[in-house]
Image 1 (cartoon, rainbow, N blue to C red):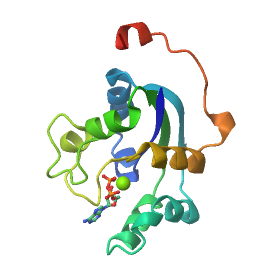
Image 2: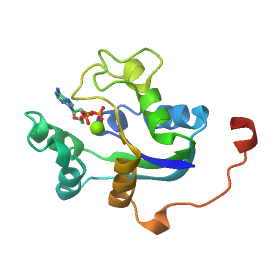
Image 3: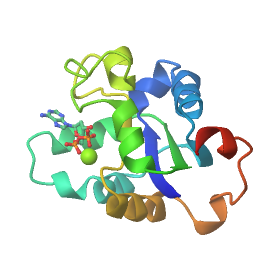
Length: 149
Ligand code: DAT
Ligand code: MG
């Protein structure tokens, strides 16, 4: 089993889409391991988006992520990282496929609804950055036999 980090961004929280998005994640078969609504300290936003420090959109990205609460999550599945990137859709909602979270719910790259870790390595890093060990629930899901062969 693999874990990944998802974060419903301020635009989606403000647009009352948290339930819709968690519902899509659950329906896909991803198991919720952790979740919390939180305001993001600037230092956390900067560490999370450190790889984009030199990009022209960096400052507005940090302003956006710290502008209102986010809903941070950890989910688990076989291939959780790539499966969740798949249901999230490509970075720019204007180009994201219909049926994906960004494709169905967003319009512009600066307001693209949700973050998902892009590799197993960054998932580990981001889970550690956003959650304490005791916030992660270790439990047996009830539907595994019907999700996996
Ligand atoms: P992703 O979130 O799909 O992993 P990313 O890591 O390349 O995309 O970028 C992080 C976030 O930065 C992205 O979700 C939205 C913002 N962003 C990316 N490219 C952008 C651009 N060209 N203009 C404005 N914001 C951008
Ligand atoms: Mg990314």
